[in-house]
Length: 228
Length: 114
Image (cartoon, rainbow over all chains, first blue to last red; front, side, top):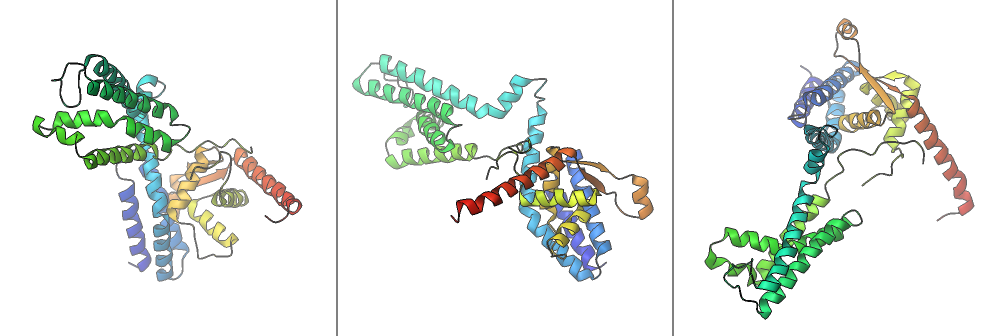
């Protein structure tokens, strides 16, 4: 066993690692192609250590591309689970589920905000207060405005992902408070709205989540259409 | 960074260029040809970069590929090769890219240094 063989073994291990859990056809093709390449390079090389060095350099330099390729293949495989031609609505939902969820949250906020402003129902810290007061009216208007912000963010996402992400995160703020209030015991619910740092932290977390979601890489490369 | 559709990156130009010269080729042969063309025979394109670009070009219809006959590989005592060929669309894309470069080169002296 030469140094080149050991290097080839290491590359084979790496290829095995990054093709794991990919569809058999895709993974098999990549493994076979790299296997053939490694064989050809060892057959063509004269000094084993020089070949080993070249093989290792090629592996290391190609690692980012390997990982990016894996990411794309996984995304494509997930897309194929729902055959677009057979079930277009389900396939579209699978791709855009988070937008659908965000739209539902936005709509719910608008409806709840209007209800709160008109009837005094408080969805954030409990439904105990049912009488309409200045506070509930103001809060209701704010929640409805947040819902509208969220819906505006969805509509804006193709123009500017950053602006859209900010609008969606800011708009989702009341819904996040509601979810957390449901998860916390009643005695601690007031903590969600009282300390400004807690609220700011939630807002930042929301921003981060939406930003990560919007900045995901494109699933498929654009097709070539010749010279423009 | 998102790429403008229809453009070719330097590696893709190299692949199409070398592919047209070789007519039918496999990955390692291509890497060797490209390295030789750049005057650095020891610096072969990384596996990940090369095979990802080959697949991208194939998906775009600029290359076509098929597995080598297993009997041939067995006779040679080696793994099967994936054999690629540049398609008509690939040839056209390369010609278009060259024409674009030529136009730009001609335009540059008229505009002057920027």
